[in-house]
Length: 484
Length: 149
Figure (cartoon, each protein chain N blue to C red):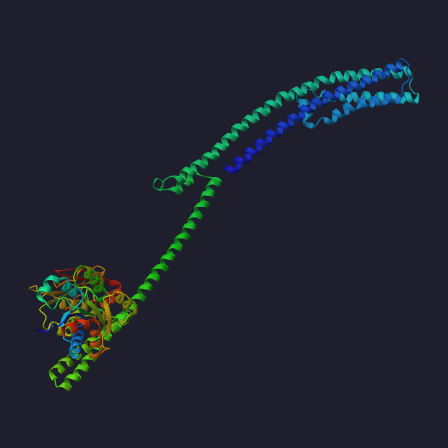
């Protein structure tokens, strides 16, 4: 049974209790009224008796006084009958006190007869003696009625007292017990629910099931509505947090891209300007030296100008490659890594010419790799040329190894060397643009590793490095799904 | 008595730029002992090795002027200035001043650089001739040159 039904039952029971109580009070009051009517009846009969006595003693009396006395006497049985409702009647019939009605009716008849006598006497149709006789008969009748009337009234009132008061008491008692019971069930179901909800989450893996079993009716509806509301609110909070995170991360990445771009522009312009202004000054010296006849110094500086221009060219090419690395190129082809290595060695011949490093490459691919060849050429060339440039003069057998293979879902390139290594504190900056860590080797644009990083990011891959004084190892992992 | 050539230090990773500066100093007919270091790290090591270098170059250490590039590997010009300002408190090189020698003229960088009171000038590579250089150098270390001349 749900709470509202329980509460309704309490209301009904209370209403019944109150109405029975009020009804009993009315009924008892009615009993008192009957007694009062009977008293009045006796009083008026007394009044009539006095009048009759006066007539008997020849004391002059207005006949109308007698008539009005009779009319007053007649009034009580009429009121009495009017007071009795069908329920009273039913009760009286049940306890055999309904003859009180007959008493009343008889009394009215007696009064009617007396009035008729008065009327006849007035018209002279009745002698004085007959009239007195009739009146005395009537008086006897009235007194008799009053006498008889007391008993059924007393009986009825006492019956009502005897039955209704215990009934009220019983109902009240029952009501108290029932209300106590109902309020206890209501508060206990609320308490149970509170316990269930305030229990620790881990001890309640199946809160839904528990709620299903332990709650019902309005409480269940309340819990369901509350849960739904909280869920929605949480969802909203989550959504707004997620949105904020997205905005924050996008703002951060935009900021980073912006900073990178500013840094790039600054460094690129610096690195472009540096060889240019150097060459300009040198050209000025060359002119002076030629004028002064120092051809040796002039040609030496001319060579330096040439080298500066080469450097500038490399830089411009690298900047263009870097810019291109961010843009997808649709020219995908199966890459012949053997040929790629051969081509690369040719391009690096200037570096390998006087280099003591042994370069070993192994290629072990079980599936063809389809991608943009230029990206892989640049990745491998940059890593290998770094290895060759930064070899360790103090080691006996300097080497650079490049292993290209596939493993499960990944394409892997590992380039290892036993070179001078990258100092620990600079390892995090390896992929930044224009970073060079070795003062002695100023060849290169400082963009090589940034370019490698860009290509790998484009291919959804990852690059990691391990470096110490023993050497450096770069490992590149690219998911195959980008390469088939 | 042999003339003492005041020592200066050029810190620049670019060999060409170092050559250009040296040649301009020569053209300006300034009699200086020139040390060269390829980046801030090397320069700091050179200065930190104070006692040994004093013995090795009795008249040529410490330098009285440092030409300092900004963009260099390992320790760049700005980082060098930070370390150098700490170093000045520890060893006797407070008479040594710095003249920037860079191709960059970034305002925010310049602000940080010029906040060091021992930075006495800012030369932009490729924008000056021997005569300009002489003027600038004399303005900064003229007294040392005069003393010795």
